[in-house]
Length: 461
Image (cartoon, rainbow, N blue to C red; front, side, top):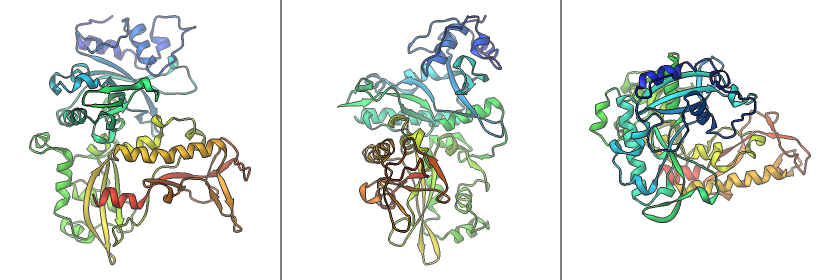
């Protein structure tokens, strides 16, 4: 079927999967066979297509050829382009051993230097055996990506050496993350070498944005317009990180108004456009207007422009996407959208009002500290409790305003919940009817970061 010692032979054989399903591609009677777990798709592919027994070895799956097989789900956009449904999980981080390693000889690099990727189209109405395989190819990291991935790996390793494995977060890094792996049960916690506190089991993973970059390359999609901050990879040998490169580009504009920055850059922007600050950020970074920042897209970085009042308090709280009440209570904390957002890396651009002018004060890369994530988790837990019990509306005022049990800004230092809807008719269905009103749907809400938290813990620190 293929030569076990030759990567090219294995890749060519794998590409025969494109356009097929596992049911049609494998010479097996699958009538009584079911794939029951998330990792089952990859194991089934290994066992019945490549004809070898799955294992948990530290070596690559095809160790003679130095090739690691990974299967991952896709979703299709309305324009026909493919996107990753999730991050790409790699090998488990062995806290007790990894601190002894260097990147070039690490278990991570030994296993994941050369990937064989099988992307299948997710369809919840189908059995996994009938998911259509859309993209198959190998992947080696380009030099500029590899430098950033190495920095990411070293940051994760340093945190373990500092006795902070329990504080690891995907927001710590750019392309290579340390995602949670396993259930919330005690058995999924592991010993760490420099702290008696147990740490949640984690695995190396390529962030969803980076997987989308791989998919676009394999599918040869050219519709998205990207601009690079780092056009010469060697620059990363001269500075400590990509963060330093970005921040230095803004330094000369600190203390200047947005209009003056435009003038110095020789551009003129529409101040009333929603994209005004995004365009100004692009211009400072040396990118064209409307371009996506390639490094930020790969790293799933959330860019937030904050307008400060003269007392340093943000003009507004920071909103996140609305949540579906029914889906919300079906998801545990570890897999929740809210936790994933809080573990993201953010890039904040702070402007402050001086009269009518907005003055650029500072920019900052930031991810939420572990202790604050735990504080925000309390808000999430209160929401799950409230929605699950149907305890939504506490009181209806004489003017028909519905006051809810949802966590308020005064009840949590980090976060709160309030409406984020076009109008009162913009609703999501409830899983349990509200006890007070009997309503089976409720106005769309979302989590918000408190303006005071942004001031105290991000801007002023």
